[in-house]
Each structure stands twice: as C-alpha cells, then as structure tokens.
Length: 237
Image (cartoon, rainbow, N blue to C red):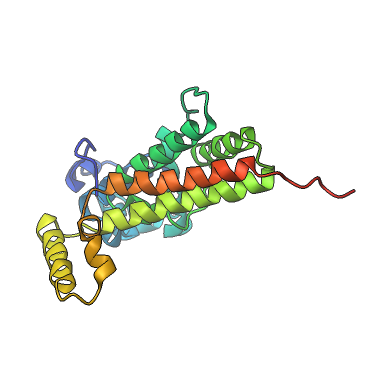
C-alpha cells in the first residue's frame, strides 16, 4: 500500500532517452526500484524489469547490487530516511519510544509492500543504524542495560514490522475484497460456536489498523515501563 502523496513515474518516464546511454548509479537505481514497487508491488519487481525501466541491460545492475536481496536492503535503507533524525525532546522516554515506532510504521506504509521489503534485510546504512542507535539509546536512558535495551528494541521493531505487514496484506485487491472477508467472518461467528470471538466481533472485523497498532504499542511500552522499574541484580564479581 502506498501513500496517496507518494510520487510515481511511469516506466517509460524512467527510461533514458533513446539512443543515449543511461546514467546508472545506486541512488537512481534505488529510486526507480521504489517507483516500480509502488506501481506494481514486490512480486512484480524483478531485476530485468528494473533494468528495462532504466534503459540498461540487466547485467549492468549487478555492478551495484550483487543480488536482488542487496537491492531490497538498499531500498529498506532508503525507506528509513525519515526515521534517522532523533525524535523531539520529551520528558518521558516512553513518549520518545512511541514516536520512533510510529515513525517506522509510517515509513513502511509509505510504499506498497514496504514491510515485506524491509523484513529480513540487514542494512548497515546510516538511516537504519541511526534509527536503531536512537531506539537503543532511548531505552538505555530508561535504565535498561545495553543488552536488554537491544532485546527490547528488537521486540518493538518486530512488532511494528509484523503489524504493518498484516496491515498491508489486508487490502491486497481493494476494499471490496476486504469487505467480503469481514462479511465471511461475521457469518462464521453467527453460528454461535465461538462465543468469545463473537463478543469481540466489532474489534475483529475492524479495519482501523491505526487503533490496533496504538493498542499493541501501548501494551509493549507499559510492559517496558514496568520492566524498567524492576530491581536488577548487581553483576557478580
């Protein structure tokens, strides 16, 4: 799912003028790949299609990216550009933590299949490492050890990726299919075999993903707040 404000170009616009060699570099390649991602989705993004959009031979792309996974890692790094800056100063570390998680979700939602692209990548770029360093640093200011801060950061990031992955997968073919899925669930629950799910049907059939995300994020943060207040054993000497 891409943001309505995400600029797009057609493949023909991305091609170099006929008869002139295309200027190929990592930045332009990643930008074109993100445009193709927004237009056609991750499954349709191939190295051959990307090369065609850029007016070059597919082999030329491998000068900058040894594999498609390398390209996806660079795309993930570019997506986090808006997350690299430190969050606004706040007295409570939990507010900073929530802001970072929201920024990441927004960044992934900014591109169609953004969470699928990001999942499984391990960028060492400044955007990714800067975001991670700020996240871990925020947790360390709350009193977590470096090790525990890293584990907590993993938990927040994995929750954000997983939630966004489900959110983007929920509407793969448009609102009509989503409405049909909701109706199917309601019909199944109407049989009366699942009383607890029936009682929560209004939530289970809701597509207010922002509300779902905020609830889960609050649970995570409240748990981390409680953990930060737990007495810690002194390291053995």
